[in-house]
Length: 245
Image (cartoon, rainbow, N blue to C red; front, side, top):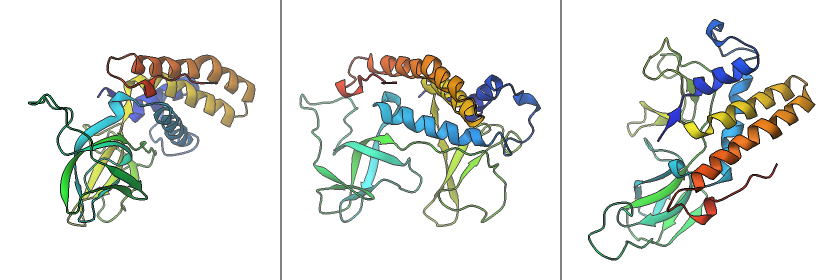
């Protein structure tokens, strides 16, 4: 999966807005922190648009005794919706001429229920949940965070993790956190930068300029990314979309 960091997108928006990112020592302050909500909203818009092939995941998940595969499992990606459930990996090389068929399932409030009478492991093809973003800095302090909290990792905390946001996911022991990186696809970057800049203009009262920039610059980038995503052999027809502006 080709990704960019939250900070890469954030800094490009700041540049378009006339700020110098290198001189900003703390992004968790006005007016900069408003950009996180813009990025989150526009990312969700892109995800809802189509079936991004890089945003689809096929991995093993365990159903409970009632056949429920939860959307949120400790140490796992959050699931937005499930496309298929399989007894065997449908993406692996097949030794037989017959591809593994999907198992019947039904979506419920907190997951999908597989028609299986006992706890079992299945291969689940699903769409990742939309990422969440913040400019709240991570601080090393025990018992500071709760499950679902989102933090931003600055360079001073860990240079390998720096520049991304992370969501706290609880591990099995009930105390230590697994931090889930909130990813952004590289192909979304031109759309996000231009769309969020238009949001910034709207926020600052420049309504006409904001609408013009969104129409002329932002949505064409989203159309372009969606078209490239759909122009791949094997991508379902449902991915072939056109954005109406």
